[in-house]
Image (cartoon, rainbow, N blue to C red; front, top):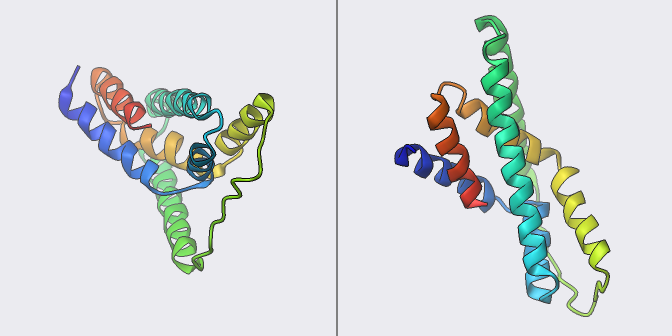
Length: 156
């Protein structure tokens, strides 16, 4: 296992975690409410692990089929998507976040469904976790990809 790629994956994954999105807000809210927090964190971690390695494997196998022109077009589209995402984030007004601690979601099933929804229905999870991390690892050797993926998963 290549330690430098493990650390690189960890720091890269951490940079995505620090950007507070819907999933992270839900995890924080559940933590503040002290409701099923271990279950919520486990579901998020396992989901992120799966999505990270889907991205790494996707770019590992698809990269061999793409020619340089197609790869350049996909890279430009990714850059345009990220530029638009950053522009939208900068234009968003800071809204207040309120957590109603009196709202008590007693249903374990409802919490699980909500965390799965915040995880898999969030389009940014695919752009960040699958496409960006997968694209970053496409030129790594197989062992380096595994180390990178494990590091990114640990940050989750």
